[in-house]
Length: 66
Image (tube, rainbow, N blue to C red):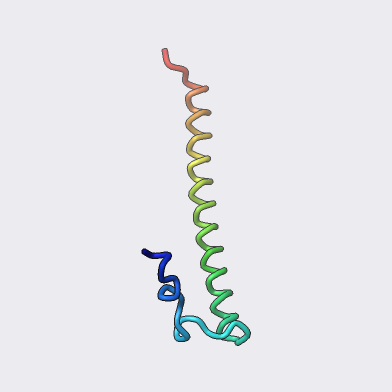
């Protein structure tokens, strides 16, 4: 059903400016900037998890279970 009417899901002129205009370029760079921030946040979260895992392994190697 969705693939039957793909033209209804395209953005209108209000949402998407001309590709060559400055507004269209600014919208494109804004999207890339937000995706970059999202990637940075995921990398930070992965770094925190990696740090916790590394600290846990170091702690368990220093204090083996009896």
